[in-house]
Image (cartoon, rainbow, N blue to C red):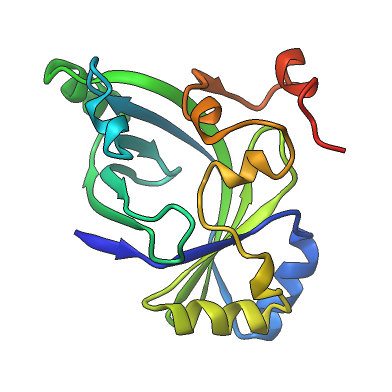
Length: 197
């Protein structure tokens, strides 16, 4: 399996980052687009117990199906994955259900993809939280270098996807991993009550 080498920086100003990316010779590979994803597990939650999951994602131009496993969710190299391109979000969903997986969550996001040398920078918008960016590269040195070019403080980097929500709400990883839908709609009352000061 391939190791993902990535870091997230929360609460970012996307227009300012676009200017910095252009100054650094960055190229916008894909404009901001809606992405849909479904995450799956077996009924007995055996993947969850291994901190693993299967995902189908419509990336607004291609559809991918992935197996992901977190070895150290708080590390720049904490997730391993196997990813393939498929031709249909709906058919991939049908296939996974046919082999006995069940849908855990449906999640909408928005993403704009940039390339700066051998590094990919994603301007991310997720429901109910401030915009952020994700930097992914071939190794930690490349990711750190890109963060520095963009004026980001490495000590502020986060590595787990649930950190995006834990930074703004009093929630646990377990809670976030069991939300059924994450949609672009007003913040639900049950979550708004948990917003951090």
